[in-house]
Amino acid sequence: MEKFRAYTQSWTRPAAEPDAGSFRVWQTDAGPPSHSIPPHLTAKAAAAISREAFHHIHDALLHAYFAENHDITDAETLKAIWLQAGLPLAGFERVTDRALIDEIIAQHNEAVELGITGVPAVRMEGRDGFVIGAQPMETYRRWVARTLSAL
Image (cartoon, rainbow, N blue to C red; front, top):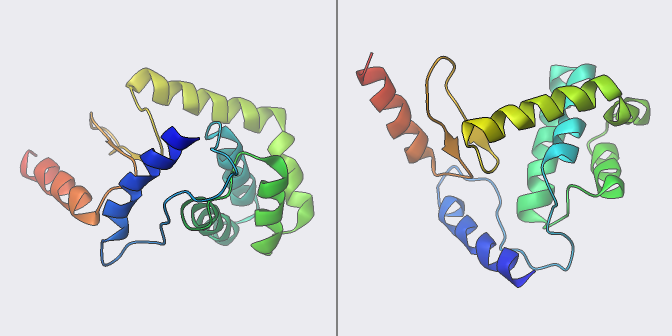
């Protein structure tokens, strides 16, 4: 747990950005999250409801993890976040849908094969390379500018 707490010190860099979300170095005894598949399932289940539902749960998941230090791989925590986001409980059942689980696992395996080691990870369509982790906006701006200048 202490290694994870030390890792979360790296969150202070993106937290200092003017357009940053809320970040807090891990202070609870919850977690650390075991892997990213459960929150991804939750986000995909919300996306099946609507684009707006996806955005609500996405923001809620990021806030729960980075600002409130919740273990967003815990099923009860995910269900509570879902309900707090105002989403219908019936839609949450989709997280156990075998087809959705297989889709998320396939995407996870593709990421591992590409060498992606964390989330968030951003990759430009049709391009090699990616940016991993919560990065300052300037990192993305430089990346996009370099990519555009190479075209």
